[in-house]
Length: 230
Image (tube, rainbow, N blue to C red; front, top):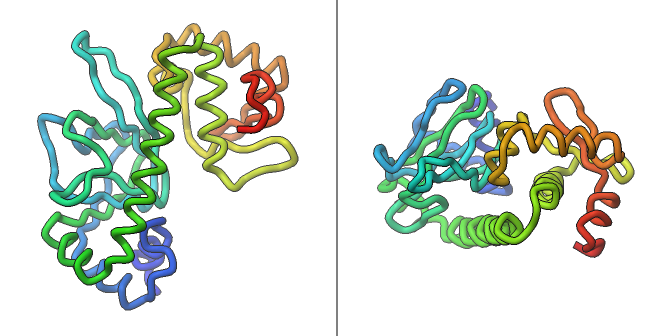
C-alpha cells in the first residue's frame, strides 16, 4: 500500500472501510499540501468540498463585528471539515487556517454526493462526527460565556486532552501544538492572562509542558472544575 492510501485509511471517517473503497476515494479526491498560516477556507472564499485532514493541524475560528477572532475548534490528523450541499461540518462564517504545515485530501461535493449514495454507512458516521463536534462546541461556548478565564482554560485543556488516547496514570496528553496566544483565542482572553494562568497551573501540578504539547492532570483538573464525574 502506498503512502497516500495508508494516510487515507487512517482518516476517522474511513476506518474499517475495505481497501477497494479506500482506493475509490483515492481516485475521486485531490491531494493538496498546505503551508503553515495558510487560510484554507473563509467566508470570502467558500469552497463546497469535504476536506480530509490527513496530516497536520488546522484552526477553525469566527470573527465578530469588532474584528476579534474566536476559535471554535482545533483539528488534527484523521479529522474532517468543510461543507457540501448535503452535509455541513463547518458553516459559511467559519475561517479555517493551517496552524502547521498540513496535508489535505479534498473531495468536491459532486464526487462526495456520488460516493455517499453508494456508501450510506458513511452518512451515519458523518452524523455521529457532527453531533459530537456540536456538543463540544456548545459545552465550550457555555463555559466561555459563564466562567472566569482560569475555568475556561481548565475546561478547554480537559476537553482537548479527552480526545487523546495518550494517558500515563492521571496525566493525559493534549496532542496539539498550541501557543499561549492560541489558547487565549480559544477562550476569549489575552495572551498575557493565559500565560500567567498556565504558569500557576504548572506550579499547582495541573499542567506540564511536553515536547510540542501539554499534558493535563485529569483528576486535579476535574477537582478544580468541581465536576469530578465529567
